[in-house]
Image 1 (cartoon, each protein chain N blue to C red):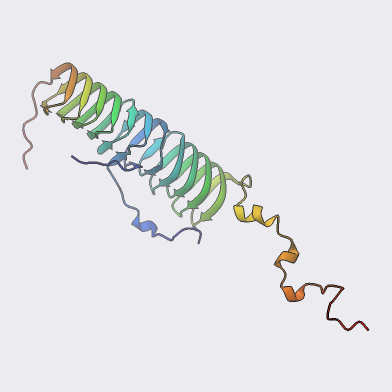
Image 2 (image 1 turned 90 degrees about the vertical axis):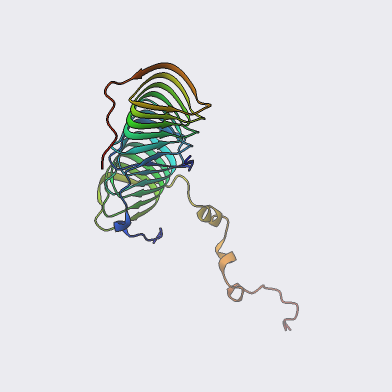
Length: 143
Length: 123
């Protein structure tokens, strides 16, 4: 008996899904999917079609997307066509990609490095030799 | 580069659809090729061949040339070749040309053999 119990799901070339998808980790789309998705990783392959509202951790887009995409990291490949609205934290786009959409950088959740930096003063970052000398010096020759 | 580079030309055409064990879908799936279903699907499935894995379940109507059920199906199955393995559970009506049921399978419902079964394929 074959076991394809992998967490990943694949909609093959020519496959058409219409409806709702939930409880999903990773999806590859070669065919057509008309659904809302919330998942960790999405790969919309070249030739694939996705329509709906999508919230994803990492999205690799090489096909045609229509709808609202909220992604933490998104890679828009040269064959992709994106229509609608995109919200992202990190974006990479290849030359040739077609975007006809509203794009918004999501500043709601700044990276940890930025939030930690708030507590660091410029003096903490300065080399010791450049810091101002103290006024009183025990071994100083004040006389 | 934010992501590891890949060649776009390496993108392969995959005809087989795989519905993973963690996924829950509601709606209709149509495919000209095979579907391996290990997750939960509520709705109709139309394809060339369907394998419902042990963890898979379908509630709805299945129409395919070849169907193998190792999981659970509640609804209607219309197939030329229907195989129900020992872990398979079916509740509903079955329409088929050829059927095979392994010892241990659970089947409850209406059976109907379609007339004029197709002759064995000749190369």
